[in-house]
Structures are given as C-alpha cells and as structure tokens.
Image (cartoon, rainbow, N blue to C red; front, top):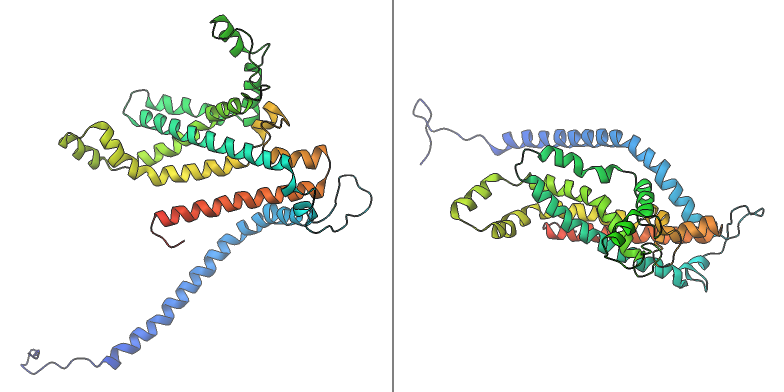
Length: 327
C-alpha cells in the first residue's frame, strides 16, 4: 500500500541515485581517515622499531654473518668465509654430541621447571585469591624470591647446598635424614633436580602473580550461582574456574617456557660447564669465551635463536587455533 504525505498525496521515494553519491563520497573519507591513523601508528612505533633494530636486529645480523666465517677472538688475520661448515660440517654444531646433550638438558629443565611452577603457582594463586586479613602481606612476601636477582639467588643456594659448609646438609645430618653430606650440585644424579628446585623457588611467584590476575577476572556471579545450586568445590574449580583462567595460564606458560629455553645464569653459577647440566646458552658461552671460537660460537647462538623462534611460532599458532582464529 503506497504511503501518503500530509496532504493525502502519495509520497514519492527518493531515487537511489540521490543516496548513492553520499555513500560513495563517504567511502574515500573513511579510507583517508584509516590511512591517517595507520601513518600515525607507524610514527608512534618508529622510535621503538629503531631501538629494537639497534639493540636486537643488528647484533643478530652480525652474529649470523660471523657464523659463516672462521672468526676467532684475538686473531690477527681477517676471518675467512667457510659457508655452512660450522652448521653441517664434520665438526659442526649439528654434529656435536655436546650440543645435543645441551639441547636435551635445556628441554628437560624447561619441561620440569615450567610444569612444577605452573602447578605450584596455581595453588598459591588460589590460596591468595581467597579473602583473608593477611592477603596483602602474603602477596608482598610471595614476590620476594622473584625480586632477588638470579645470580644472587644462585650463589645463595650454592652456599646453602654446599656439601661441607651448607646449612641444608647440616640440618639433614642433625635430623638423621642422611648418613653423609650430599653433593647436591656435583652429583650427576642430583644436579639437574637441584637446579630445577632452585628455579621453582625463584619463579613460582611470577607464575602465581599471572594466574592470580586471571583468577580475579573471573565473574563472581558464576561462583554465586554454583553456591546456590550446591555444586561441590572441586566441580566448581574444574567446570568454572579452570576453563575461564586457562587463557591466562597459557600465556604465563608461554612466557616462562621461552625464558627457560634461554636459561644461563642459574646453571652457570651453580654448576659451571658441567655436561650433566649444561644448557644451550652455557654451550654458546663456552665456545665464544673459553675456546674463543667466535665463528663456531656464533653458529651455535644462531641455532639457539631459531629454536626459540620456532617454539614461539608453534605456541602462538596453537593458542590462535584454540581461540578459533586462523593461524
């Protein structure tokens, strides 16, 4: 039925051609606005990109370039180009058993430490998240191990775990739990577990802090509804808490895993160049500093970089697929 205006005459609809130019005119305006915002974003990011190029990209490029040469510290003659000899040669990094032993030690350390820190951090976060008059004090005390520099904590634990003068062996002997002093960092069967335990002591607060932030973002309505329905506490945790905090926990695990793959200071201070605990970073330092093989050490550092980059890409892809985003 046709519409009518106030005089009773049929209303005439505006032609489409009168509306289309307005829409067509607004499209270039939106495009120019987006381009302006894009240029503004690049201008704001430019200082950071220049800084990253200066402190990261340029040293990385120099390291990769040096890995294709026979450069050595203190050499008088200029380095010669050797191609992929340091990677795929008879004595290259990928053919060195010590390198693969360092890779295995690093993966073992990363898996054990991150798994224990995640479980303990989740427990600490759940405990601190409960209302308590001393909750603020507990949060501050929790951060103390994480705030201590890694070298300081490693040296502190090295003295505490000393087989002759350490306080740990002193109390274990006094309580009759051991018959003789234990060489915690010298025994091949205990050295890796000792380093993992010290790292867990130091880094669990970091995981607990991130998981606590995820817990505090969970809506309280879910818990109130579960309490009204009489749902058991473990079921509430399994069905409500854990699924809602899982993205935050995943981000914390990724951050900690990438940091664990680059572990150097804790292992080097406590066990130096021991083959039983040598990480990839310790191996690189040994080639560069102890043996003064700049080219070979640069090749090992490059392989380490690509391993960490590969783990980063894979974990980000897994997280994106989990969130339903095309990787």
